[in-house]
Length: 62
Image (cartoon, one colour):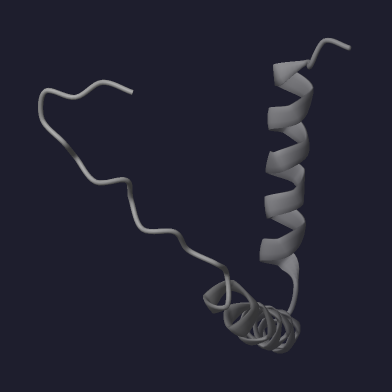
């Protein structure tokens, strides 16, 4: 499958035009939905297991 860059760019342009044409109230509802989603994802991302970086020992190779 070969991506057609001109078709992708045109699709993006049309999508942006449709978003811009929406009423302000609808845009604000969309913003609220995105904010709610971000709040749901934030606690999940903070509970990831994080390992400390390996210590740097000059002159040693692995």
